[in-house]
Length: 191
Length: 245
Image 1 (spheres, rainbow over the protein chains, first blue to last red):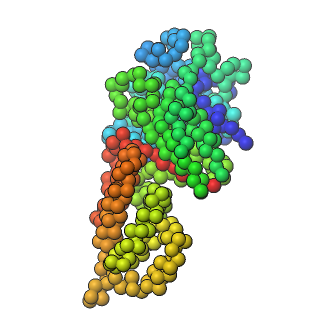
Image 2 (image 1 turned 30 degrees about the vertical axis):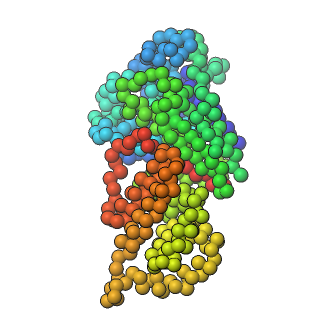
Image 3 (image 1 turned 135 degrees about the horizontal axis):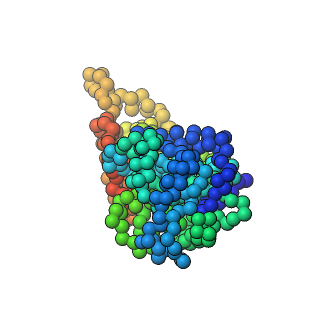
């Protein structure tokens, strides 16, 4: 049986851009995401390489987070350079409860796990400048005026480069290790 | 039997923001499967080293990743052929009384002996007992089944006096009267009893239960559905799920 729950990754720093996301997978992901469409959440799939590169250009790892990353160097987030980016955008007009962030989380996990079934890899990125990206999305007619990211990340989907580790960054020609997670015993109790 | 360590592993493997911890969780093995509570929190994220200018916004990110953990558990549970039940959506609980009944039953299970003793005491003193038992049976199906399995003589008595119970809802002129005030009175009494019993529990666990029960009583009393669209007090967010074998 697939172990996708154990391989579901927060980080994939390189993607094979010559390999698009399979059409069948794309259709399944659209079905999943559209089922969660509401007056507070709308799905967005981005495949345009030019737009994806624009978003990548808006991502610079904040220096305030530098202490978390051993061997920190200034860089953009290569996770965003993927064949497909997925995000749920929120309505900005009201002060929303946390409920729709929870709903979005369930959708992202469903989307990511479905991608894994097709052999794809996943990466998450919240470290990009929301404002210029939102302006660009509106300029292209992809979202309306009162919609934005609201603390929701972008999910990168695609096939990893076959001869490289997940943490290899082509743009800076080095591997960037991710932070180690705390032990499960520190926050999960079996009673 | 569902392996609680596997459930723990699924939760732990869920992708998290910067690989940090975004929630606490507790897992309980039950005769029917597994119960999991998840508590989004900023306390563990980044080991508290960062002071956020927008803690509320970052907290929503914690809730998002808690939702991801729930999504992963749901996907895994369904792949194993287990039934998955998500209990945190208050609006869903309110719309589905049977669902509320099962959830309420789950909370009362450790204290069931006290509930039965209270019911038996009421039985001899006033008709409220019959009304309560009937309403409990109607609204909380699982509780009735458990009562019946433990006290067969009580079940027989209720069955034989169904006609008498029906008359309790008609006035002296033979006109039907609303059950609602009696239902509300019963539930308010039970709510008071529950608050006393839960006084020694961790407020993080007991307070959401009591607040939900207040919400349920409020809807019974007024018939009005409360506005659930306002931002919640995020310190009290808790997500509960059950996974059934």
